[in-house]
Length: 229
Image (tube, rainbow, N blue to C red; front, side, top):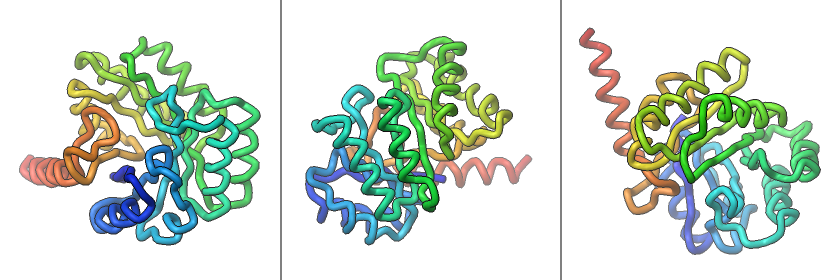
């Protein structure tokens, strides 16, 4: 699945971006930490594709400025409004994560538990430990994202995909940054559940993010190439 993140200065602007993204993406991510005073009810009601609601903490590259209770509370609101997915960081206070899982129980909302490292890519053993920590929260999808400084960083993160799948855990894993672009292309082909792409080059939500048009063109070329074997 290719997901287009949505961030905007107002709810109205975000609604316009959602409309543009709908025919291009498999799902959209509402980055409510980057939509001031986001009207979740309007945004979720207007969806034409499944939506992920993310309220990213500053510690992991987000823009939310309130308390942790307020931040996670907004995710609980998204669950009540019928969001398809909510994304919460593994490092979030266990009691707050537990409360969110309780809110999700019995609903159709699925949980994504994520971990990001903007400083680099740790060793494989550390990455696996972070993945196991994400899995301990019982997510539908575990998400591990790091910054790549060289190709070996990409290989370590991509190696998490078959590792998680062998354990029956759906995963999204790739690297940020210019050196991480190859991982964004390879990850879906290894079984990563979600790839993220921007509507336009200047709307990327993370370094090294390709546009939806680039991702679709790469898919087309890969399919053509496989047909010529």
